[in-house]
Length: 588
Image (spheres, rainbow, N blue to C red):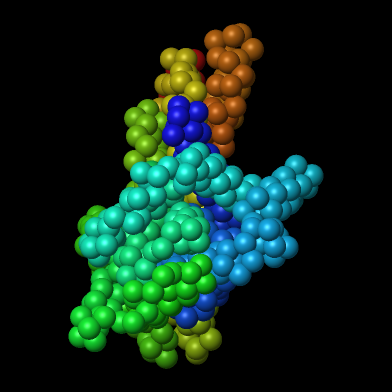
């Protein structure tokens, strides 16, 4: 293996990481209630997800690529770890299809050519490029991006495999497969081989190729296949780099499943072989079809045994990657939305309100976390903003559906008012968290491009973030504590923030025109202002919902049209203008 092949190997790993990121970005663009619902139906119940994993892997001939796709789903918040486990288990069966293709017809057959990695790369890349370059619909472009990312992943795996191709002809390397007749050493040898070539199918394929010219008994093939399955986890483990904790747990599922399969195989076969004085077929010379059959039987039997043990695998993942205290705490309220309570409206509304309070707290903390990233960027905090944004999406989806189900019952006027208020505010909490993710992306751009604002721009932004922080606290406290005195302060502050953003935008345009700030700075600065302004708008909506619970006439345009004439509103507006708007004017 010369320098050129080593460089090719490194390039293959780089392509793998790039393809994974590209596909993940496409999946995030597709993320939403509709996409999440489709994925949920495809992956639930567990048996459906199990067969989905088998089918997808059989089609693309790569358990690694399928598992990476599932990791991307989990990372994007579209799939839970519980849903992902059966799919990952199914990939271990689907990947055995390659061995049958090799054993039946070899690479020269028509079927083998149509299902080859090269053809799949061409198909995915062509369709992906057409969708991405020649369509205007964002969702279609995102699908194209997913396909291009998948094509890059498959290309990278092919490049990695080609870079180590000389090892197939290396006699010393081939002897590794033959010297380890000891089961433990055989498993270790299989792990070593698969870790190098980054593919279970390729590892089994090499073994099939060797058995056509070298006598290899099944007693040697068995531990090698078990080791190859474990070693093939290496590209999947690479995929967990830089991902959130649930994504890392999903990657570990692949490794854990194959380790448990190896343990089960040893527990079943080795004692049986010793008791019977040696299973007759174990000493026979292996054939390509026999190896394909052994590989399939191990995977099918192992995964069928492990499927009912999905909860155990999930617990092992949580033991290996321990959750943050806040991670499990954030799910407590949403998990308490018990369908059995729907017939008892007071209890159902109470658990819904508790879930809404938790969602409020998550959204409030997330926007503050995003604001801090502007001046103190941290990659882990950036990822946490996106994780909590996905969590808010789940809250809105599950809590919204739960409230709709409550609405089918007979309720009194107060219960109807509370239910309507909760349905309204959870949408605003979700949108606030969306803007937190947008602000975090702006902060990432500022960090990556090393953007520096002028002193005036930085001071104006600081004053605006203080105003936004206050309106978020006001709206959240008004909702949590049911305080009308706080709710009535939100609208005057929201109007002040609108006036501030107009002044700041005009000031920044003047700075760009004078050369004090650049065009690039202007773009990201404008995006920040827009996001802050919209956060304030959603805080206003939350306050209106709180006021509506006190006065059914205090709704929407009616309230907005009436309160500007009240002395209380004028006093609050004047106070906030002195505190924030005039401060912006002075900073110029």
